[in-house]
Length: 226
Image 1 (tube, rainbow, N blue to C red):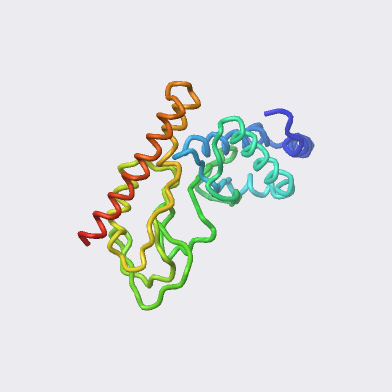
Image 2 (cartoon, rainbow, N blue to C red):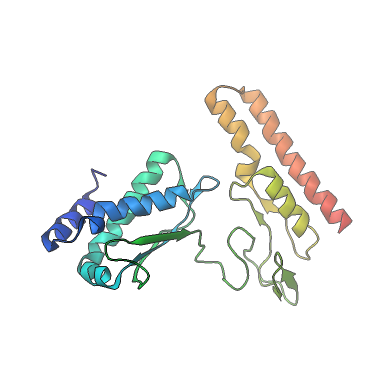
């Protein structure tokens, strides 16, 4: 990782502290980048990252975290640019001590997290957003019924067609349900074919229109049967 001034500054500070190679900023940054890219899904990467360190390592790094955190975000941004991926939401990076970690062996955990979504209402990629509806309950997956405080719709996030159609069928009969926002599921493959030169512009347009109409039909049939 070069050409990243924040990382270079963090490296200079850590070298002055004489920390072990496993805690070198470039090693930590690479471990985080590898974990994030390895969990990519639908063109997106997890945005919430927790780096666990042995208590001793956490104390050793406490004086350089102000440099280390932005340096790792810089590395993540560079990795996303080079791979064409994007973070699910703004980066959330946390360092914490853990007695389960051996000295010099940090552990990195990543997940998709929408900081605006109430954790008690839905998990990421289930559905929720925005307009109050009074007096209704919504059951998500096999979970308990919860107050419906947002107008629900399917948010595709680049999922495949089978998954999106399943979500449409599940939600079509819910009072207040308003439809879907599934752009990438509709146009990603035809557009990719057009960009690769394997599909003409007219054919890509036809496929996008057919995909869009197909999802509408799934939604309408499910709503009629509900």
